[in-house]
Image 1 (cartoon, helix red, strand yellow):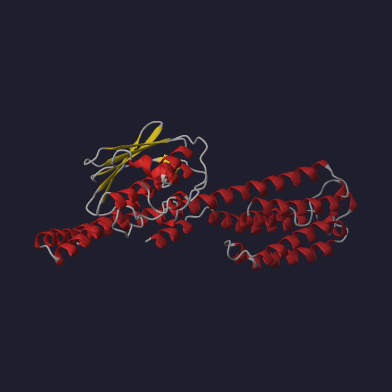
Image 2 (cartoon, rainbow, N blue to C red):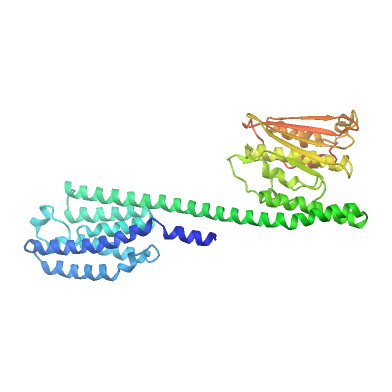
Length: 419
């Protein structure tokens, strides 16, 4: 479907009417140059030179009409020969016309046919090619006249402006067509994904949900099968909903690195980065994510550090809350701040445990969580009540305040023990 739409865009290309117009222009200007020569035959000192040139010009113009029918046929060698014929006609004009005719500002042998050769460069290669070809014509005109007369400069400037203007328009049109083609491809892919999502929802997801329920009811090995089916259902829902690479681990703390390719999104450089795709891979059978339906933009460094801090908090849940613990991630997009809360239903952190871990050199919370937020100008608050689970609130401003590059060492500083 996308390919058919792309072909349709190419057929609608703004270039094609320009090539057709150029084809007609070359024929008409060739006839004009020959007709003008015939009307001023007496002003030529050596008309045989002009006749020989016009024979070559006529044969070349008519025989190369297919060459200017589209961009594919208009090759660089053709353009070089075409411009050479135009320049040759300009330079041999003094050999054919009388000195009086040249002094009076009479046109060159190719006359306005020369502009067709320059415009072919502009349509084919853009304004830079057009500027180079028109500059070569300007040099030839100045050599032919010997002095920079007013009419010569007028013609030179006119050709140069026309060539660069049309070349620029062609470049803009090509960029617009590429953007339109890409938009059509995305639209087609989105529609196909929606169709697949409907089919999957009506079939595969319902089957997985049924297997999970029946397995849990039967117990034993069937319960394990049901648990795996539930995990695959969540992963598949994540994939269908966002087109992201789902996490394959089942534990809360084993999600992929949010700064890497596992996020399913390329690095956008200096532009804002949507936080949601960086958090989606953490979703699993024991991790629930609640987030806005619209993008949550942050500076790339801040988004990656915030997502890494969420990963560190989930890793704590996996290591210390027990195998049966569940975690919930809540994303709140406030006007000036993004708040991410990670909560679990584990046993909580005993009083004084964090200070004891830090004194022993285990700096998971201090560096992997609080340190990351501090680097991006944010804050991290940890609330834990023994027997009631733990809640980590990560708050970062939307405007960057001196984001540091991810160091990739905080998780290793404590030997993998965060608390």
